[in-house]
Length: 410
Image (cartoon, rainbow, N blue to C red; front, side, top):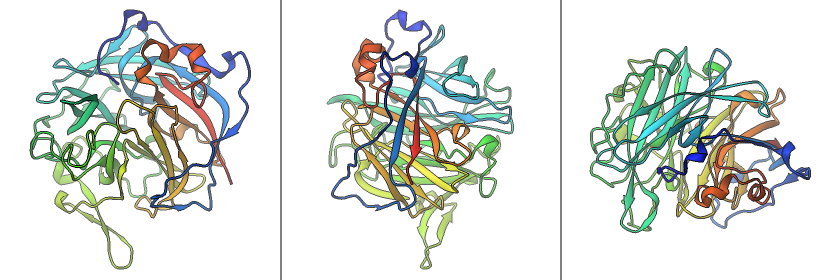
């Protein structure tokens, strides 16, 4: 996630699975951990998660957000590393982002095929990274957002504007660039107003509704994002970064090439009425937090678990961007909440980020699934060393497309 090139030998294919471990990993339940200011009730339907010990890692790149297309394959962005002989790094004036097709029905036996690299300027910011990615009706919508450096170190501590979506009509071979700008006030949601100002829809991700969005409640695509209402350093350094924030926000749109980069086509979650029903508004100024937990949010994704009829949200609080990170899972019957906590994973990875649950790999009963994430980017070349991966928590948490099987406990 540093956005800088690493040594050339990273270009080799990297695959590392639990079956390659010298000793079998036993199933284990993540130890109960909480925080005194936890703003959620505990779920009565899902009482924690159990790791089966099965995992698989592919490539030496991060930023994987798979979208399940109608052809049965997964399509995902990626960057800051290599897939086969292709390299992408998202920092600097020549920021690049990659795309890939993921083939296979078994997470333990996948094939990751690079589909190309696109270049786009992050100016006036320092980096331009992938975020929300959706393949719907054979059209691929690929979002990017910008990040800035602070004068106090850390890793991309300042969230910049969301630069809209580039569009592919041929499953990633060619692209039409986003018309939105990276300049403040000229991005898709016209925020921030000034450079380094607060952002609400920072790094949005599409809710995973299954194959070709088959379980969308209304045919709309929903986007969930972390944000803040305070300027950087108003209460802490890196308050709103790529992996830290204060709130979670929600928007929706009917997905089409005409709508996806049109701010007027979007609706924004704007709180609840007196009866507790969700309010939606076309006015971005009316947007309200779906979740408000000061200094405890960060990169967020959401998946609809169709067998359980539950929405599952994954949130990673990775402040201050270069140390251990905490991830928590929430569940709800409705996309607008109320949300209840399943588990709080303290020091998960111990530095896991971009956590999501690909709907393609949810079992028929909804209880077994795979966490997808990348991990431990600050450990340099050691981050993919098999000896090091034995000691990560959970084992096998690599800097890669890292998949780990879990069971939702009853």
